[in-house]
Length: 197
Image (cartoon, rainbow, N blue to C red; front, side, top):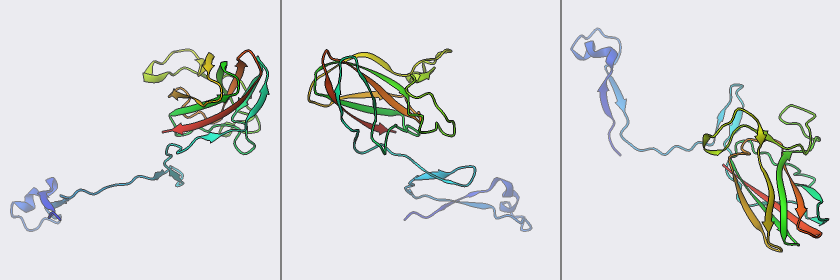
């Protein structure tokens, strides 16, 4: 283990010059070792501990939506205990869809159900399109535009189709996706998501 170095304190050069009446030690210990630091959170201005979020390790899989007619829509996630996505502290999002019928779907980021508040705001306008003025890489606009709206994405049947959405949905507290089946026939659709810091 390395020995600590000492350096002169700027306020006590007089003492180091030999004046013994100085009341402040003229040296400052300068550690010369490497020490790992682990950050697991912080204390907010109210004194509450806030843990640091980390990326989800696995996908959360919603309940299967069965028999969605051509032109029909469904909201995901849709389980009783998790019917919205909280992106607080997260930047990117992976979504995945597994349809029983191949073809196009429309995917839009919308406000979650009105059975929940957005932070402390209630009621919200459920299933309304989320609006933003910010886009990735700092290309901000002065007006609001749809945060995420993919009008026609082709899906392959009976496999997970996985898509990465970067930045545009970060920190949304009450997020759902409206999926419209435009495959030409009825389809069962599975949906999953994974949040990333």
